[in-house]
Length: 124
Image (cartoon, rainbow, N blue to C red; front, side, top):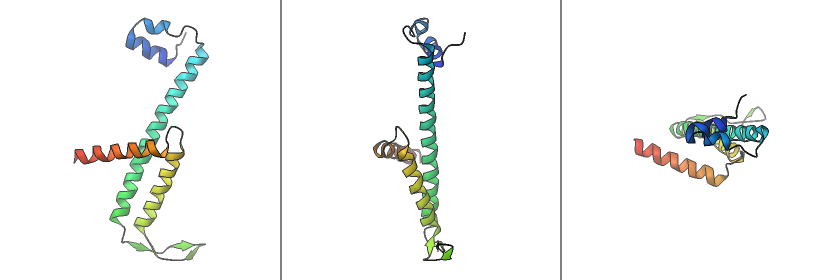
């Protein structure tokens, strides 16, 4: 009989007491908990990867802020733009999307972003 991953993890961590921890919980409850923890972990990984992409786009934007190209509106040339403006607009859109994900309001994203910047500056 298979056991939920949380029970396996607890048994490895605290020994035989982990096998008895599910008392009063159905397997469906445990599997729902496992699935929720797995999805939360994947969501945090997705947020980190999105922030990596934002870092790359902003680096590109800074490097190419003066590289002009034509802007378009309704498939017609419009006001001139720059590659940097284009990249920073994409970065802003990605950040808006990340902020809309569950467990990630603007405050938590700002804190994670700041922590990444501090870590990056220390590694230089």
